[in-house]
Structure formats: structure tokens, C-alpha cells
Image (tube, rainbow, N blue to C red; front, side, top):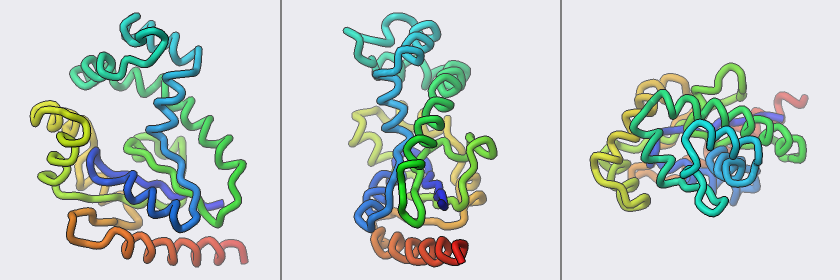
Amino acid sequence: MITVGLTGGIGSGKSAVGFIFELLGIPVYSSDRAARQLMENDPYIKSEITNLLGVKSYDNAHLNRKYIASLVFENEALLSKLNAIVHPAVYDDFKIWISNQSAPYVVKESALLLDTLPQQPVDQIITVFAPREIRIERIMKRDGLSFEETTKRMSLQRSDKEFLDNSDYVIVNDNVHSLSHQVLSIHTELINFAYSIKK
């Protein structure tokens, strides 16, 4: 089965694009959602996070996302260590998930997709691109962050050029170009690609 990576910077609109793929009948795996669930429920991961970031990481056994964010987005070393705890478990979860799928291809949505290559390979990469100003506005509105907090989080991710240079497809999400038309065009190509491999 073909695995298509869906990536892009924070606020680019990956989830919106993923939703359109789902409407087209394509299974979409959200790495961010899986990471949150594992951080919330997996005993080993909870223990490792507590050891790394302290007991305040959980409040009444629930993930204290605000506290964790306040630490890791100010300390790249801590962020890397947290990712090293969580993302191997996410990949294991993804492998179980994909084994239960039967579509011509699946989409794996992940902001850190490029960081996990080549250990976690995909067959094609789609990058969702949005202008910086639009992304900042979206993030501040969605997450209730200040301008400084938003730009700090953006600075911890790969540059637009890195995302674009490693892409097979690019979707422009700038409130002008139609997302659905772009996704449908790529979907048609991926379906044809998937069936050509089967022959």
C-alpha cells in the first residue's frame, strides 16, 4: 500500500487538507492526534515524560499541555528529547493502523515528517504551504498565542524552502486557491499511481 506523507509548517492547514482526503474516502492518520493520545494514556510514555519534564506534566492524570509547551518551546534540547520519547511510539501505532487499511493509498499527516526520514519512509510527500502572515494569524486565533509565542514556535520548525524542496506535490492554502480542487487533482494522480504499481 502506498503511504503519502502530508506535511507543512504549523498553521499551514494540514488538517484541513487531510479532511478533504477523508471526504474522498482516503484513510488519514494524524500523527499529532496519535501523539496526544499516547501522551495521555500510555503508561510508559507518561512515566518517561514525567521523568523528563517533572510531575507538573500531568494534572490529575491528564496531560498538562500548557505546562509542557511552556518548557519545550523555550528549550530545543527538551523538545528533541520529548520527540524521541513520543515519536517512535507514534510510528509503532501507525504501523498497526495501516495494517488495517485497504484503500489504494493512505495519508500520514505529520509536521515532523521530514525529521523521521528515512527511518520512517513514505512513498510520496505533499507539502501544504501558506504565506507566513496568514499562518501567524491562524495560529494566534486558533491557539490563543501571542505574536511572539507564535513566531517562536514557527522558528523551531523547518523552513518553507526545506519543506518545498522535499515535496512531490505542493498545496497552496492562501485563502485564494481552492483546496478541494488541488486535493482532487493530486488524489487522481495518486489513485492512478497506486493502480499502476499493482499491475
